[in-house]
Image 1 (cartoon, helix red, strand yellow):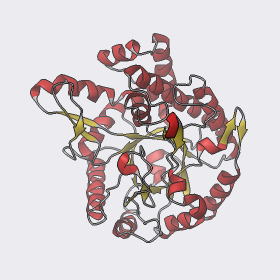
Image 2 (cartoon, helix red, strand yellow):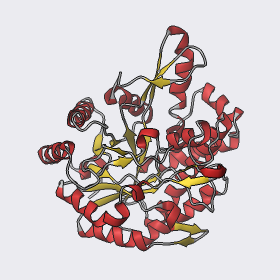
Image 3 (cartoon, rainbow, N blue to C red):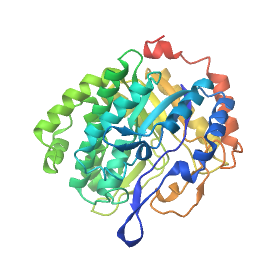
Length: 400
């Protein structure tokens, strides 16, 4: 499943006078005006799958109230172009009327949205209900960057609980609306690793290497280690909550594909003391870290995001990520898809969307004038050369 994506983040960040400002990447990159052109670019590359989703904060106007016009037009155009969408229902933000990820009412409200979406568009088979749950919870509840902008373990665990619950309730609602046949959930999640800087940092690094799994553990119903169970209970999760996640996660796991996102920023160096954890750059790489996640969850794997903000080096990064994919497949990991993310350049991701500087980040297959970048040419060639060699979707997923 060769794919690309339309970057559709929309968190809120601190604004003037202690207020909040919505950061909408589709607005910043001109996608709302040029979405037909952008879909045509996907087809021109020979790509059949697109990670895309309507702006959740604009569609979900209130309880059981939805504004579908953009989704109606966009999905009709994707059908016309024979592009299969992997629909992203929530990407880093919620509507203003909901507030933020600390709102305990949100999971059920979101499940209603997901069920209504699936009922309206029964042809959609692939979903990412909630994108990058771990990153959303860290940035919103622990680092104080987005949405509720909290800086506590309790804020993180509360956001994590609500995000994972929303994801599972949405999956159940989608399965109920369109039926299980051919329905798959590609849980795009950031794959992380924490390296100890010194032997004295080993315990701290181990804690974070267990914490990185929490979102998928809850979503797939996988028992956590005792240290993580204590951490969750110490910061707001109850025993009843935990047992609910184990039951709900195991119920939907047969319909899941593990989506792994990997960037050069996904590996971290952990100091021995309480100093800041810093970026380490690529030390292990995609193969080793994805193999760790696969050994834990035993699910089919799709590489759902990667890029490099260097136009000259990006084609080599693409080739390296693809070589890791091929080697994983040769070593027995069921690989079903690869994604360069995103189709067009992004804006202000160099500050993780915390600042609205209007700085263009050259991460796309095309620039914001929709001119192809060298990595776009390289990806088009890669797709052409490999698309008939790898196993067909029907062999990997057991569907027609």
